[in-house]
Length: 305
Image (cartoon, rainbow, N blue to C red):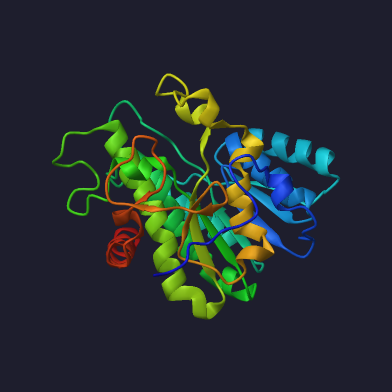
């Protein structure tokens, strides 16, 4: 039986604490959704450690404003913003085509949650699945050569406790037959994000690329605008700085060098669950199943070709 990965950090740790003493001055990072929610604190921590950070954002005006704020706060003038709409495959391709440098850290952080009505992309894909997973998959695939060129790159796939709500519905991921359910749609997208880390590591570890997934915890952000706000008990909520801690741990901590294919919460590897727990801790078995990860990768490649 494999020993679960444990670190000195936990629920209350902040992103800055996780990166204390870590020098990232030679590293380049991309953070999707870096101008809102925990993306800002993730970017702030990496920039404070010296990394060159690109905020890949749909609202470029907000992204430029946050980038300027982070430059002033961290005294790091290598924080910039670039346009990326994950629900638009042409936008993803354009972003990839504009990137000409080695990439050390890719944090697939952006997401939408529980859209009350069924929305589709121009391809007919369900919007949560298309944004949270397919867009990130296409971005990750497109940046493979840049990640390889970094000689030790890391991919961070931000999932959530939502993976416990639903597996990937392989036969009908876009609700062409099933009645649309906002939380089932969100849940399958977050299970898919977890599976991305499993298969990316299997395929690319020989290129020096390792991927891990995580649940950042319950943080009050715009993500809950369709759900009436955060409903998690107060004692289980995190600040944005605490919510970003597990992301930056996976992105840059020396503790996880050459570690991939795992799912973390509270800065430690999460327990695999075979029934949904009342406290929504852990990761569902189907969201870390290697066979599911392989099937999802192949299916999604066909979608975006």
